[in-house]
Image (cartoon, rainbow, N blue to C red; front, top):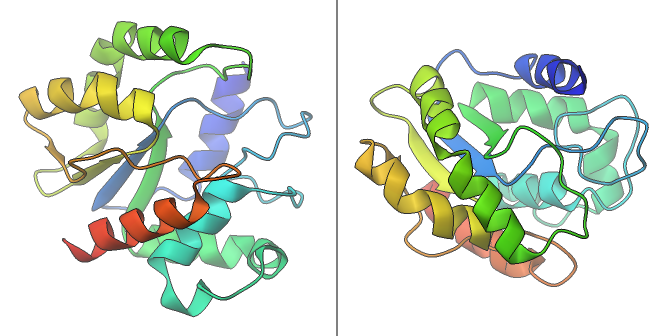
Length: 181
């Protein structure tokens, strides 16, 4: 039931034509969870929504020097820009993963879900859609299978998840990928 609700929130910002499809690891937990991982939620400000704020800072030069709170306060506007420019984000997995899962467990779950992910990407992508994989376990497990299925994966190295320590690397790599189009 929860995934249907989050998918509904995400669909509000789905571009008519997806130029760039970002694939992260797993969806956020339920809205009632105070987690910061709520990329498409605008119902309340999430402290340290690092994936969202660092994505916006990487893609939009006018946001590069804004404080996280400034970006968060205009989240709806930024999501509309993201949508208008053909960007969309999905996850490799259907369920939110607790922080306690090991990297090996996460990668195994992604590998097991590859047929479903490939099917989902086929339904969303057009011939010109470029994929960007976020986080090492998504990159390691999904790059070759997605390329073998005929998709163009832009990154040839992992795109760090912008957690506490990888925010700058994430922004730099994502900005470079966006410009390589």
